[in-house]
Length: 160
Length: 160
Length: 160
Length: 160
Image (cartoon, rainbow over all chains, first blue to last red; front, top):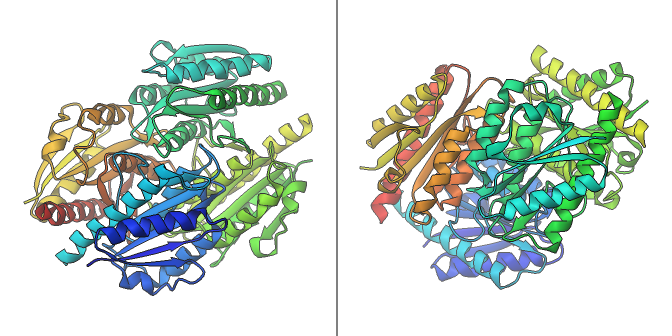
């Protein structure tokens, strides 16, 4: 049973809603899931998890400073997250509003940690993106991310 | 009167429609505008222009190979486009479909040429993005890009 | 005389050194320059400036959380920085260490504010990048950035 | 035994040398490796492979048009590469010369195909980057990429 750790920052509640959908998708795939606000998340929990999924609103084309602060602090674990699975999602106000660059910002952090990420050939390729309040489309994208990450974590964790 | 050169590749006609809206915006701002399919565009025309705007469909998260081939060939002018104004736009199938990364791909090329680009504080920040057939929203974004680039080219060209 | 505002975060002193070289370049071009640590910078100063240059170490492929927090807070000025000139630089540990993505992270923020940026056809195309302690090459790149931004701010500010 | 397919474009021979080092790393990890110039590569071979590694020189901040043309043509296989493993590398002229954005351009294409990629917590995080002729450092980075991708492909392929 893969352990999936979802860390998010949310100001208006949109990213929080996305986090819940991602969690449901991961649980449906049989994973043990923990969901934490970034303010309450412990860096150490990253090491226990088989997979880490990060979510943030899009602020100026990238993830929120509060999320980047958490990432910056994760340097104490550098090298020890290698080979874990990751994913990312973001909410923003409008199309072309920087949401893709925000998702890739979070994915970059996971790659620098030596983690494994997977794209989606359908839908939001890099990770789910919401324009304002998550609608049905976004809900589906989020569930699929949760499932995809949980399955991949299951496969790669069982191998070790 | 600033000379604005719009080069685009279009397969389905969506990017072509965007190119026309961008051209109208630039003309409205008093610019002399040339619009060319990338297959018919001459590299030399880049040097004559005060501003260059590139448009492409989003293919696998970036601009089309046909557009990148044109950019690759522009190396014969390297250094001589320094200080010109630029812009970019892209059409894609869906939200989160790679359209922002495609626009930034084109903007990167302009930056490597030493060109000047401007973002938009409202709307599509990096450049207009269409999901399928350009709608009213996209039309407005494209017109605004044309106007913004034409005005900036006018200002910077008159300075020299 | 253009007002150039340089805001940076530095942990080891490398980014600070880069900020000083950028400042010297801008001053040499006749600009009035203010250099501030991000912890001591006031958001309001962004509005007074004709140009804003941001510098940060590369942390996990992007700028430091402390820099992104500052950017996030700049939302109170949203729309009022439109048309100002910008630039960015970053220090990191190694080649391929995420320094380019960090510079572009900062440039994205400037674009979302509707600001104007210019690439360099020679050297560090998006903005100066240092691997560890800034050497002669980096010093030159930084001076050139300062000069380029100051000149462009002079041109565009005098137009208004 | 994982099948690793390396496709590259090379103009000066630098990217070709990188491709050979990557191939050696993958073979050392027990993979069956095919290396092809992009001009001679068949799209169908992508489907047979368990892993695909793409290499290109950095042209204007991104991969070469010739490489993007190949990627564009891979659309006939869309959805059928989902879950395969991928990687990317690039050669360029100088630090800050767009090499990271070129590597990420190729990684984006793999993600849009639904493929799996892994970063490196040490060295070139997104993928190997050479400044001019590949030196010892680059050779090591390339071998490590080959090994990493081969091992990950072995793990994930055997699962299916």
